[in-house]
Image 1 (tube, rainbow, N blue to C red):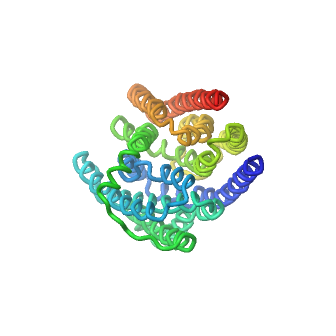
Image 2: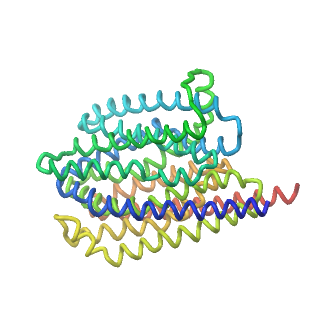
Image 3: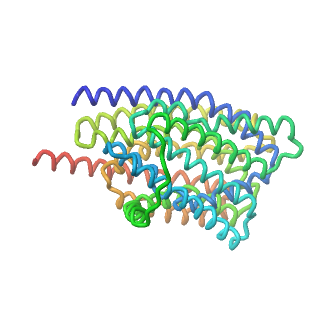
Length: 421
């Protein structure tokens, strides 16, 4: 048991090192030389893109109702996965098509640009398929392969956008930006399918209404969590669109881009921790050691990122944004500080998922959604993008503390029940 724990902790350290190395090479380059140039080329139109993107994310629970998380837990704990994945991928394709249709209909009612919505939704559908294949690769124990291809879609996006901005800068538009994302996600998906087939053999599409209904019922708690997480993290952009201007959205997006780039390491680390937690769920001591390892590493990584970004915020923002003013700094600092509470969410959220404590996690995120909506409603009309940034910081802090306290409580319950046995 101790040797198994050592292997898991060693594997986590190796894989998080690979993830960090890859993302420290790719993410900064995309952030510093590609996406910021996209926003400079688009100007305030980028605010429209950010608003529409936030709107589409609200429906992500249809496209991804927890299949990835459920898949990791399921495959990590069973050896009979062949037929399961055949059914799963068939259901996933049906959900993705439903997602695109519902988003388009909702966008029509909301008065959004349907062309932009379609390409964004298609790109998200393809990206989630890529992630689903990655989760299957990881769940079969191929952690390093998953880590190595984790930024594949971003690599392709960099190449495509650099080409477009080099030769077609004067014609570059939102449509080109979102279509480039679709192309990049398609290429990454094709490669992930090839790797999956090489490691696990061919898969076949199998459709069963009974199987689908049973799985969707099991996924219901995951679906609720996905919806609530997307809603409470993406509602800022939508409410800014209704309560403020595209310029304020662009200012918020300028800071949020750095937030998402830094947070990517946390997201990937959480993806690595979930199957490891699931495999160690019966070893309470080993489970807590994994938690401590994850906490220490993420605290160092995200903590360092926060300090670096806050100390150099003026130089960074003024260098990369043509429309920079000191107001960018004010909004930026609140958004970046929100990375600190995310450490707890990335470490203890997967822990609760592995213990199947989904209802209480849903309650935490539901309260976070209400909190964020209320704070945005009160703060945006007065402080605009700064108000949205403050709302983000306060909401993430609440969600993190709630997740941490509940996870510790549930872990202590596991210790008590195991000691009685």
